[in-house]
Image (cartoon, rainbow, N blue to C red; front, side, top):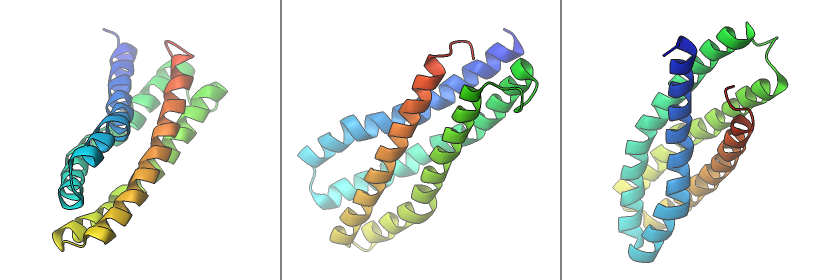
Amino acid sequence: MTVFAALYSLHTLAALIWVGGMFFAWMILRPAAVAKLQAPERLALWQEVFRRFFLWVWIAVLVLPISGMGMLHLRFAGFEAAPRYVQIMMGLYLVMLALFLRIQLLQYPQLKRAVESQQWPQGGEILGHIRRLVGSNLLVGLALVAIAAARPGF
């Protein structure tokens, strides 16, 4: 396996974990939780889901730029020489990172406090904010994946 192939594989796996996790949460877990759980159980579930998922997102947040920069330098000899689609992908990564950081650093601690203090209406409101941010991030992530898929082999 070449260095480029290893970087490409790591990059793809990190993106798959992040975007796929958001897709699963939005399209599968959320509707199932709403259908089967009352607010206290649902909020406690989401607090635990986020705690576990965010660890994997942090790994992706680190792996994506490291592997991406490695591929960028191996394939194009730097950012300036990279095609426009690579620059767009890098910009979309920054948008996704900003949305994730907003959730992780601002919204999630509020959700955690609301669940711990059993403030269910407040927790539901915070979870709604998180849901909208995750939905936006999912759309950006799916667009990024579509751009990458249209350019196989980087």
